[in-house]
Image (tube, rainbow, N blue to C red; front, side, top):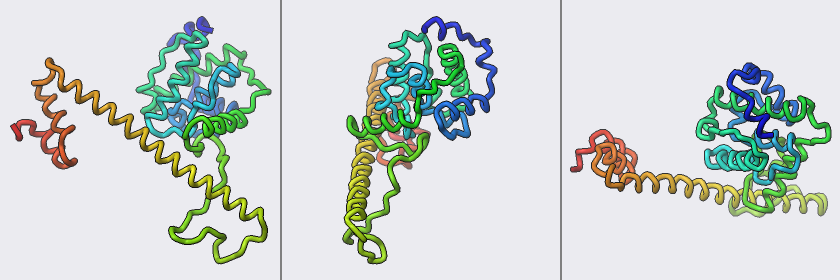
Length: 261
């Protein structure tokens, strides 16, 4: 496996495959509807392609098909990198470039991925592989093992639409209609329970994102405190931005770092 991946050089015919062919390959194989290469920047598509090529190797419950923040995208690429390591695939994944959504960077990686998958299965799609079922199964396991939002981008919506809840009003059908039977009541309870769960997951998601960026800022602060950088003008400007009370103050101090000295 490692040999196949390593032999895909920059002048390989794989890198002359056009974006339309790549999109057609992705959509036909995974039953998706991507229209742009950068829509695959989250890493979820790449993970499922490896799941199709090597059944049972990819932990699909860890793959977030609704990843929109850099934090969630990085988690998907971590899964992909772990799979490559397990399969002894020597491929460097430039995550920082891919998550920016740059078309060329993502196209090149998908060209490599197509060449790799074709070399493993001869270009023949596994007829026993059900991509939608695998995404649904991964989503169910994901919801039971950890707090994540359902996918609304790459996969077909699984959770039914939920009507909004008006604050302070009792829950019931609109326009004062009485439910015709127990099934309607049970359906509403399920819908409301699902909405409450989504709200809880959303809060958890925001907290994780907050912690992610706080850690980055803390690392920058530590770097600015190092002796070799402490007295540099650019370090002073960075500290002014970090410690400013608001955005306006931050902008002014960054332009004139000596203003407060």
